[in-house]
Amino acid sequence: MKFKEISLLTNRINEMKNFYRDILELRIITQSSDYFTVKVGFTSVTFKQSPVDSEPFYHFAINIPENKMAEAKFWIQTKVELTKEENLDEVFFKSWNAHAIYFEDPSGNIIELIARHNLKNGVEHNFSSEDLLNISEIGVVTDEVIPMVRKLNELGIPNWKEDSEGLTPVGDEMGLFIIVKSNRRWYFSEQAAKFHPFSIEIEGMDKLTFSKKTV
Image 1 (cartoon, rainbow, N blue to C red):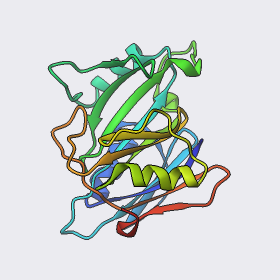
Image 2: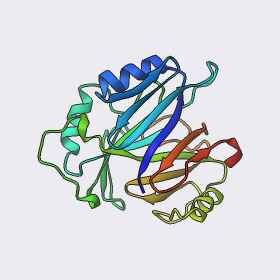
Image 3: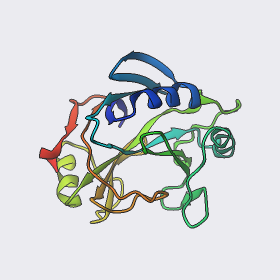
């Protein structure tokens, strides 16, 4: 499952534009005073200005080549501070066969760089922003996890792992919805999960919009 386009909200549009262009060295493909769109590999990500009294944030993951975690970690640490969990700034998910590191952008989005070893997408060149391959996860925050999982199952999107009331991943390693219970603490973060609207276009499917009516 490939995420082609994602639209998120931010209340720091100018800071975010500078961060994604100058820090992460990604290409801005369109912009105006209240939005911009950046290319993350084959995924287009649009950040739109939110109401000034809101502070939206999300969790999303970016796939990198499965053999480049060490280089990616060195690259990103020259730009931002990695967040930690139990004093560790890197994790290996045994059941997912993947290494991951985390950091935040100016809006407080919890960004994960993940090397999924099952994908066998290793490269030989030195790591750069060109190796931010695609958005491969987006968090969906809801009061009841399993009913939301079932809604996605009905659209033809299968579970990636078994049902869990706290967090259930749906999709595959190229594109996962991380269905998480409201107020659950995000891993590698002090932030509790909160719902904020977003929309997403998946290759071969209609656009999905996650609004308050769907949770």
